[in-house]
Image 1: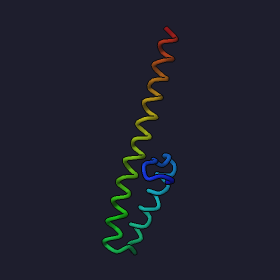
Image 2 (image 1 turned 90 degrees about the horizontal axis):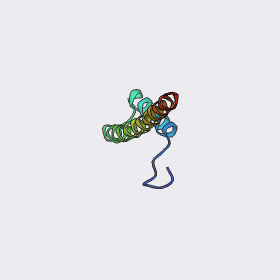
Image 3 (image 1 turned 45 degrees about the vertical axis):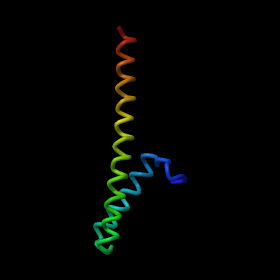
Image 4 (image 1 turned 30 degrees about the vertical axis):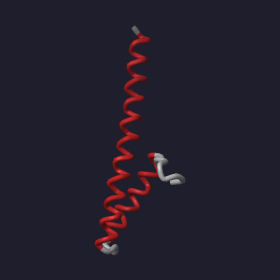
Length: 71
């Protein structure tokens, strides 16, 4: 992520989240590291959900637009 305020793309957030899950599952991190990883994972999950919600809104809008054009 280039800037602190910049949000990663869906793909970047998903990939980083997958890496975090893998790190947590292997159990080699200390408790403190695991908590930091978990917190970052929560942030990334929210970012992914925001991207998915936005995509769903765009799809719904496109469907509604296509339906109104058909009528």
